[in-house]
Image: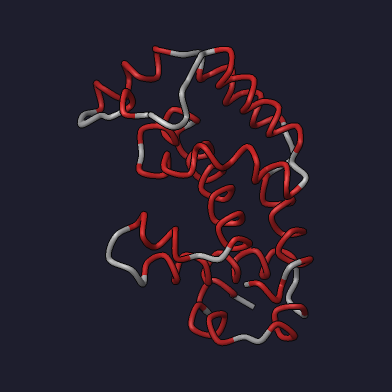
Length: 166
């Protein structure tokens, strides 16, 4: 079954129906459900804040993984996703991704990054992104991140254990 074409169905599924999905399909269904809730609001930040706690944990950690897999941790910090940067360490602990949490915390601490104020990561051009990328040892973080179990594994388990909250 091509589950990537069933977004409307996932939005209507009951908890019991979600529980019958494979892990891969469940992850995608929860991703669709949380994205839909965020996208249903005009402002992204307002949408994220409209999520319940369980949805916010899933959504935030998923965005970290999406950004790192797409353009590295630097991309996470320069994009609007950085809004959840202060939360993802705690959220990774909640889902059991301790190695990810340790890696993230060590990078932030070693490089003295203030997660409450990432305005120094504001960019407008590719050249500014490249300058940001050179500012810290992002490649080292990214390489170590790619060696870890995908966060999707932890997120799927977390979603399955908390289905009633999605």
